[in-house]
Length: 149
Image (cartoon, rainbow, N blue to C red; front, top):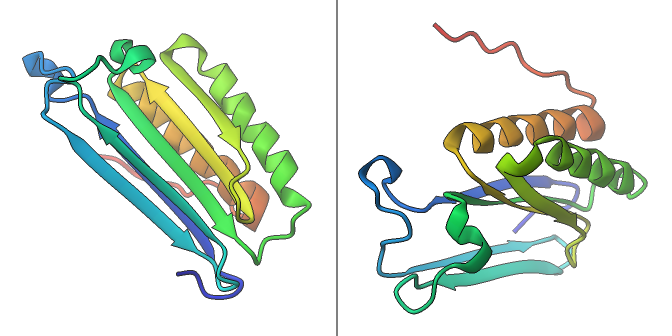
């Protein structure tokens, strides 16, 4: 549950298995649930279950990663959401065929992004780009200087 004026940034991702060992969608089943409740009592609920043995995962079968991003907050100026959504959609388009995704408005103030990616590198790149645009457009923060050795 979010406090009044708080913002939640939630990234949830799933790999198709141990890809280097050829385990693509070879698990028995997976259930996932995300619930975000705002101070006003409004909520966002995502539930899904994946059972690869019963049916191929369809479109996802040629992708190895699935992810969801939720940016939710009643303290954000509502006028900021449309431009952020457009910027996020632009990032997804720029990734080409390595990443497919879309941006939608959930039933609470914010945005939801769904993504499938062909590689861990592509997923990491889209995640980093999305976080960067969120930080800049919602909070005015620049990308932090992360040193890697």
